[in-house]
Amino acid sequence: MFYQQAFDVIVVGGGHAGTEAALASARMGVNTLLLTHNIETIGQMSCNPAIGGIGKGHLVKEIDALGGAMGLATDHAGIQFRTLNSSKGPAVRATRAQADRTLYRHAIRKTVESQPNLTLFQQSVDDLIVENDRVTGVVTQMGLKFSAKTVVLTVGTFLGGTIHIGLENYRGGRAGDPPSIALADRLRALPFRVDRLKTGTPARLDARSLDFSVMQEQPGDDPVPVVSFMGDRSMHPRQIPCYITHTNENTHEIIRSGLDRSPMYTGLIEGVGPRYCPSIEDKIMRFADKGSHQIFVEPEGLNSIEVYPNGISTSLPFDVQMAMVRSIRGFENAHIVRPGYAIEYDFFDPRDLRQTLETKFIDGLFFAGQINGTTGYEEAGAQGLVAGANAALQVQQKDPMILRRDQAYMGVLIDDLATMGTKEPYRMFTSRAEYRLLLREDNADSRLTALGREIGLVDDDRWQAFNQKREQVEQELGRLRAQYIHPEHAAAPQLNDMLKNPVSREHSLEELIRRPEMTYSQLMEIESLGPRLQDPIAAEQVEIQIKYAGYIARQLDEIAKAQRHENTLLPVDFDFAQISGLSNEVVAKLSEARPETIGKASRISGVTPAAISLLLVYLKKHG
Ligand code: FAD
Image 1 (tube, helix red, strand yellow):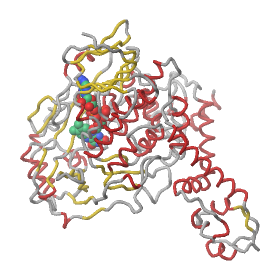
Image 2 (cartoon, helix red, strand yellow; image 1 turned 180 degrees about the horizontal axis):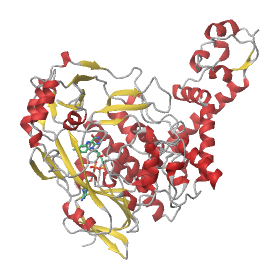
Image 3 (tube, protein in one colour; image 1 turned 90 degrees about the vertical axis):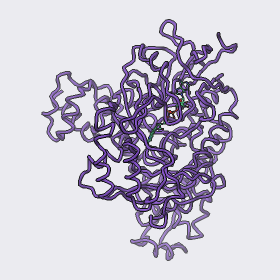
Image 4 (spheres, helix red, strand yellow; image 1 turned 30 degrees about the horizontal axis):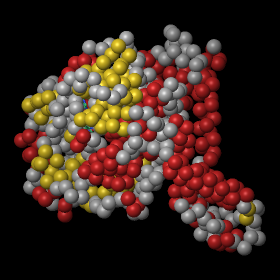
């Protein structure tokens, strides 16, 4: 039986990719259906209730700049906020928030339920309707058919999911949820390349059984960071600290003694796990000389007794988990509320996707999130937004939205996936981006909001706030450029006290801020040089744009150069070893990948802009 109403876009799955996909398409005015297993789990965080961090925080800001939900939901749910790398340059500074998982889910659900053009339906999707290599709808578990012009699949870790705890295993999508077996079988019958990955999670502990007095307290930052460009501190719930403790030699001995019953070390798990987020048994084996590993003890919510011990993800048998946990300082009497586990699931080779996240074999079918081999809420949300927007654009018969690598981490993410694929769960790092100085958290709005507005992702309020900030920053930059101070200026003595070298000639205020010892806010302490911008976010923009102007200009030059050489051909049998100056690692990577063009060579991870310059010099000389 067909459901009476046909939709433009159907999104399958209500996780992080699915909600951003459905919201994006609905924001663009397209008639959208979000079909998910269980409406109660919309926006559920399967693992650690934390959003952001290095690389991931950048994605959250970009999702937010395009009108997505993740940033504001984090502001409504965050119980501890920090800026990571705060002492480093602005390119690698990243916001991270520990969230109350219930508040987060509520915030996402509220956003979804108040979004016009978006219909919800609870059922498992078991099948796709495909006619002449084009998807035309889906079929649910009870045989109900839904028609649509496009379908976005965001089914996370659920496809053929198997949960492992020690040598025991059973089918599941994540703890407490059923797997998607029928859909996995259907997808395996299509021509996509499919493989298995695995991820894991630690046991959750009862806070009442822990001794926090022997752990190191880790408060959030003061002033408390805000995530969304539309957020403010008044949205934040009560703030609470996290704690730090450590594993010890005894813990490691207990883990080693349980390895003969580990699904990973006995070969039961075939899927590859995240190298950058390894299980504790993996860490003990890989870093055998390390006597201790740090554990962040993170509350799961303001009204929850559950605590997430970040750093001891495991799939060891339950008795080993118990002994391991209780060997840790502060956890001696710990009660495990939920056991840790690993999950293995199907993912599809993202090289079978276009840059829009539409599949190459079935028109109108898009994949986003963990199904593409990524890990993390932020990576999922970013892909969801791009897939949802492109599904809607296709329905509207408009040009697709393809973000470039020099434009957004979202562009880096999708380009990496679609061109190189992945052999392990892919997560974002700042090191994956060539143009880090341009792709900062703080300027995600100036990179993306206008583009989002153009295609209907950005509403009036956000657009107005964005323009207001942009005007403030531009006006202030103009003022600082035009206002000069000379040695006889009344403010010169006060200024000289702040400077290494006193002003000996006329200087613009912009030039003074460029000096390493000076900041915008310090300069504005001299009253006659103000008034300063009252909005700290706009003030930060002014400072960054002045201080980093030279580096930014250089990076823009590099981009222009790379674009000029994007399609420069490399000979098929090119011997990379003959280029002096290239590291052995780069030679090995280039020789294995055999890129056809300079553009493709530059996107191989580990092939640096410096290596590309050497290649170009060589080609020019010998070409
Ligand atoms: P999910 O959040 O999994 O959402 C999938 C949605 O699809 C769910 O709503 C589900 O109900 C629905 N669904 C599935 N099948 C169907 C169907 N057939 N019909 C209808 N609806 C369906 N990330 C990290 O960054 N670090 C970690 O350490 C980490 N550890 C993890 C450990 C575990 C055990 C798990 C399960 C996940 C872990 N993650 C981790 C990953 C993180 O949870 C995911 O990357 C993220 O949730 C992926 O988002 P998604 O939207 O792609 O999928």
